[in-house]
Image (cartoon, rainbow, N blue to C red; front, side, top):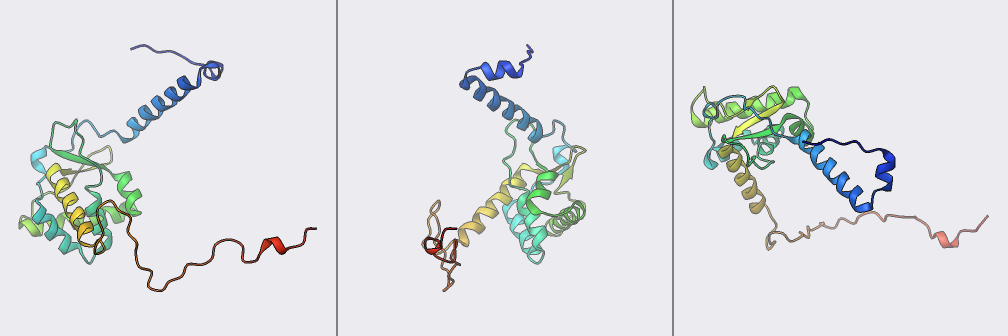
Length: 195
C-alpha cells in the first residue's frame, strides 16, 4: 500500500480529469465505508429460519391491519443480498429502515417483534426466529426470506397496476375530474407599470 499527500494547490493545478477521478474515487470509498455490510453475522445462519413465498404471503395477510409493520416487512427485502457473503443472510441497516419507514427506534422494534410473532404463528413454531440483529446496527433475515418478500412485493405491484399498463411504461392515472392549481403568477405581469 502506498500513501501520498495532496495539497489544495496540487489539486487546483491537476487536470480536470484527474480531479474528477479523485472525487469519484473518494466518494466510492467513503460510501463503501458507510454502507458496508458487517463482516460477522449476529448468529449462525441456521438460527434464522428461511421464509417461503407462501409464508411471506400469510405473514402479509396477518399484518394487513398494521401499516407500519407491513411497511417494515416489505423493507426487509429492499437491498440486494451481498454477493460477497459466504453465508445465506441478508443484512439491512437499522438506520436505513428508520429512514425509509420514518419510524423511531421504539416503533421499529415493535414492528419487528410483530413481524416475528406473525412468522411464528404462520409456521406454528413459537421458537422460530425470522429476524436477527448485530451490534453494528443491522437487521438480518435469511436470503430466502429476502427473495420471498421481494417476490411478494413484485406481485403486489403487478396485480395493482392499472389495466393495460405495461412494465416500465409511465402510468397515466385518471384524475377523476381533478384540475390542478395554476402554477405561476395569478396576474398578467406584462400589464404592470414600471416604477
